[in-house]
Length: 84
Image 1 (spheres, helix red, strand yellow):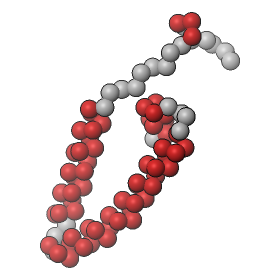
Image 2 (tube, helix red, strand yellow; image 1 turned 90 degrees about the vertical axis):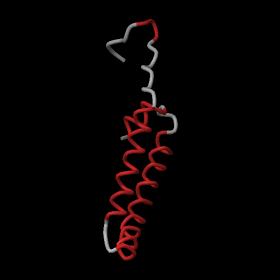
Image 3 (cartoon, one colour; image 1 turned 30 degrees about the vertical axis):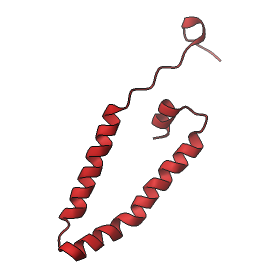
Image 4 (cartoon, one colour; image 1 turned 60 degrees about the horizontal axis):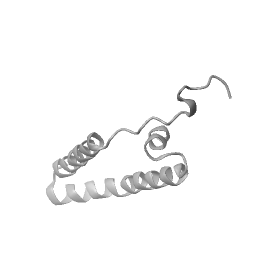
């Protein structure tokens, strides 16, 4: 994940971006099981949480497909160097 984030957004604020991503993951991990249990208590079925998860993944996949690929970094002189 850090390599992909660095490719898309650069390494300048990589620590902050990884922190925000990790916080979002932690929030979903904290809320998800309780929300699924609440939905099960209401409907007596896990179909609603499963459908919500599938919907979230479809939206995430659509966003991923629509985002353009990062540009390759410019190399001084037109050719890569072999050493430091």
